[in-house]
Image (tube, rainbow, N blue to C red; front, top):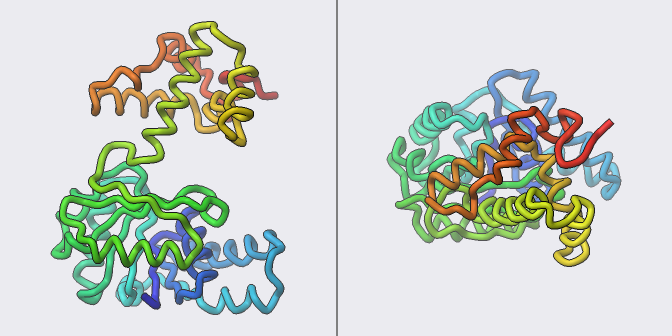
Length: 279
């Protein structure tokens, strides 16, 4: 692989473009409007400067590898295309259908989706064996993990090529052998968060002691209740209900008090109140 296309110049797309260019790849950053593309490229440069880890010449070399465009035909001339647009199945299907018709036969098409079916996306193309999920975590330059998710027909060659890409950009890749709701990390993380919430809602320990136990005992940089507040309690609650329905497993069942908190509008940090209060 030499050329990488990133579709979408939002927060995730810009982060992926940054690490790919820093890893030595030529990067084509594409979005619908030139201003979005220009803003995205400027954001990459600003982030590199703010990090303070590179000198001016090194930053310029990275920036020279990034080309912005609104031209989908140009964006298709890549060895790997990573889609990082809105989390909407209809939009993603349309994009993958277009890229399938534009890209050379060898091009791998990847989606940065964190929840949608790779198999369903792949079914809109004629290269289902070359479609894979590549779930980066925010913020992309700081988070080392990438989840690779196989669709029903994703082949081993596609997995190996994307693993090599991840390694070259300094990421640790883990593979979900077949797609499943929540993928790998989120299923584990949600189970831990839900257990911490149940302990708190059952009155077994204070919020501070629960978070301190997780930080001191599990090495978490932020306790599960404080993390839940950052994520948004409504977002967590919705995910729990989805997983509970999907897997028919009560380990994902929201505690009744947690449900009441969400109904009361105690949704976490952005609303000023969740498990903690924010002024």
